[in-house]
Length: 309
Image (cartoon, rainbow, N blue to C red; front, side, top):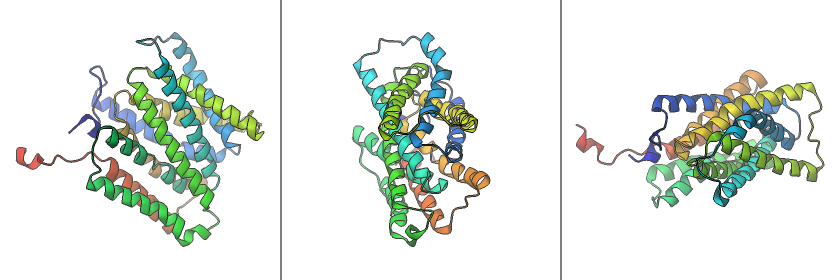
């Protein structure tokens, strides 16, 4: 089994597997709260994403200013961090927009399809063929997505074609964000990487607000509280924690763990927002979740039975 097939450290000084697994679990629970908190904040998507990252950057800023990189930052570092910031901004923009048009569980399931891009690039990079389980998993995911396009659910007021497209766009940029982060995180600490990426994303989000002539300043104390919760729980406790994990854990492992966000977000949406998926929506959620699990699950050794009797 290769490094990319299990939750194994990629550095000699990496934390123990127990600590890494615990961090992954905390990260999944934290990011699961994002969709519900975002739905409670009635504000433009760019504003929500801007302050989510802005408040998190304020927390990380002092540590970032004291930190010293192990090696001087070069154009490669800055370029990848800039690309990750742009991808993160677009991921949030597309996903938050989809949450205004789709139920939380459906939107989260669709945006969680980003592992298809991560797994595809990983296999191409390592010159690996797509195995039968991976192709089967892709079939499950595509079936779940096509179900929304082709079924009678499209006539429902709770679902819309633009919402589906926004969510899939969010998945694409989410995959780019993870790939860029995994490449640069091998040589940069989280306290340096995360604030730079978040600031790059904030510049993009501020530009979008300016072009769309949308307010960037929250108009009520309630929004400030929600933004603080979004920054604290899913951003620092989720995205920033995953940024730290990317130094020790393969990107495909992070993506597989994030499949759990589908169930977590759906459960919170039911408890907080009263959103209970219909049977048709549940078909899509189950197909997407099953497909992603099959795609990202560590492959079995072909000859394991011969050596372990």
